[in-house]
Amino acid sequence: MNLPDVQRGMTIMAEHIQRLNAAIRQVRLRPGAGYMVKESNGGTSIAFGPQMLGGTGGGIACQYFEVTDASDETGLKVEVAQNLIAGRYPDGMGIDFPPFKLDISGNSYIYACIYWDIENLVIGSESDAITILQSSDLLQNTDTLQYILLATVETGGSPLAITNITNVCTQPVPNPCLLDWSA
Image 1 (tube, rainbow, N blue to C red):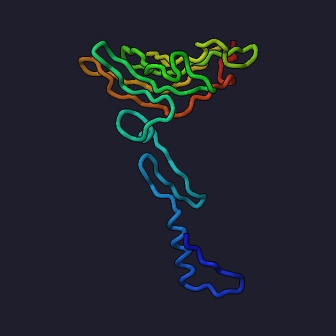
Image 2 (image 1 turned 90 degrees about the horizontal axis):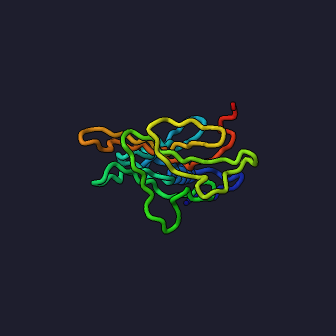
């Protein structure tokens, strides 16, 4: 960056202003692939729209648990990218594990399911306390299970095929405050 060296009491010349202007333009945020830049009087922000973060129609890849079509001749399947939740791999995932796939039969919701030890307010110590599952219905948290939506899968056509996958693309964050405490 070529900033002018202006000292107190020194005359500011047009060249100094031009160099400042060029330096500001050099570091200005510009729109790019997968995001937009919004400028306002309050400042500048970067906006990542849902259409830019997931689905099957381009955009940038999800960083967390991206769900993709893995259907084969045996039926409809989705593959869920492996990642950690609260420092642990969900059951069936891990280093050097095979790709994690789920069978689906129609429109589906893909969830991370967290089992909570509510006596101590910690995630259960069992190996299957964190799982990835699919459901044809929206699931509600219970007094011990927290469901975190990872993606929705839409199917259609004849023969039945996966037509769209919309990924949430955020890191699942277990939170016991979201359990159903009404019981």
